[in-house]
Image 1 (cartoon, rainbow, N blue to C red):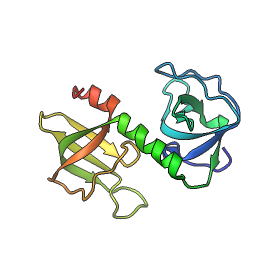
Image 2: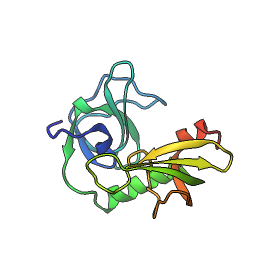
Image 3: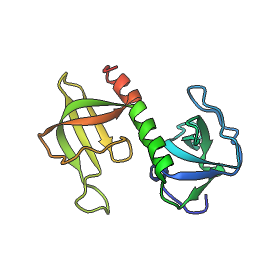
Amino acid sequence: MEKELRLWELRGKLVFVSRKTRAKFPNDNIGAPGGAVYLVVTTWESPWTHTEKMIVVNSDGEQFGTTSKCIELIEAPLNRQWQKLKDTWDEENSIPVVARCIDIGRIGPIGNRPRGAFFKLLNGKSFTITRKSVSRWPDNIEVGKVMTVWLPIWKAKRLGLV
């Protein structure tokens, strides 16, 4: 990658995959073929190899895996086609839940804008979200307020909601 971005800042951005990776990916995702443009839908770092991995989607909606060493960031904003694809992917891979906001984190150079929040579900289970971990950040977030939060499916499964 020419421009250095933090891994979590790549979510929702367009990238050009310059070559196919040799890395392995979960859920039967195969390596993205090189020479094409993709939308980054999720990112993580492998705990064993510390490889920065991501799931990308092509313009047809097919999912592939790649690593940060195989991509180049495209600076252009998302056009309607890519934005629609991102919104569709987010809706298919997230679930709305009702929870009460317990605490809001405002650490870092962003100022007074919340960066993360701690929520408690009506069944007593709790979870934390950050701006980059959810597809939609809750509107008008306040401590003590009950609101709808869009959780990734994997997190909802871990909490026993799905």
